[in-house]
Length: 417
Image (cartoon, rainbow, N blue to C red; front, top):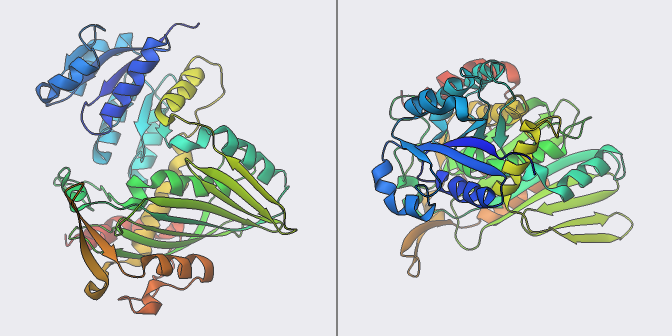
């Protein structure tokens, strides 16, 4: 076995804890070695530190990531950054200035201009950074993309993403940037179902419609969007987005946190010869126009461990590139930004449609929107916008990549700044 990859992790709370758990398991197998970690509130995670056996593993603990990098960078092969969105750019800049590549949790940023600065900074590192859009490396997904590129299903005519992920009111109070357009210090956040929680699936749909290479993503020509909120938050909890690609494919996205019940999501690709349904964690279904049906269950997939291992192979020179680079993230970030520009405002979901639901078992409060599933279906299948069915507004204005120049002004106006 090759020498273990040496790394540091920024943070202990939130999703950083999942990275700690994944790396501890990889360390047990000889794939990795955690050299250092940091958290400004490290003392609050004593129990977690014991669970991860940081002392027994000889892991150095710091309060500030800059001190950690200054002290330990010569011992590291990479830095893992699973921190709040608005901190990614500065931490990536600090690591790459020392030549270190970064495993960045998704999204890398939700500010297209900041992304360009990150891409430029990444050239300073010894290797390219990776963005943790976890599902790109699924073997079944990659083999299906190869079949799409080979033309087995005929031309792609469209693609859709439907997703309902219930989130309680406490989710939007989990920190001081949840559900916000801007962080308290004024930096762009745009925390939402589209840009953050379900960003994996949005990126996946762009992957299906990209070409001609296997690891390629759709390029945007135009975006139309309606953004809504049911929760008392600054940002949007419900997105209806349509985009045309430069290759002539129309994609539609309908995502919400304003719902109850089990979470659901489905990526669909509409081709001349077949309709493909891909449900992460469940199965792949291909319905051919001639009546044939292929169903394939997805194999068990530990996303964090698998993605770390995939990146380790790249760092060792065993594969030519990371699964998703910062440059590969351009279509996703641009789509999120242009959705805000197109919508221009975040409209309230009509209060008469919104019902509070108390989950006594969880002791959590949810909001449910009457007719949400039917509104999603009408949009995804027939292109009928919620604004045409009694919601507050009509479809958003068309926004093109040239309109990214207006993005910052639009977001600050949305936030009342």
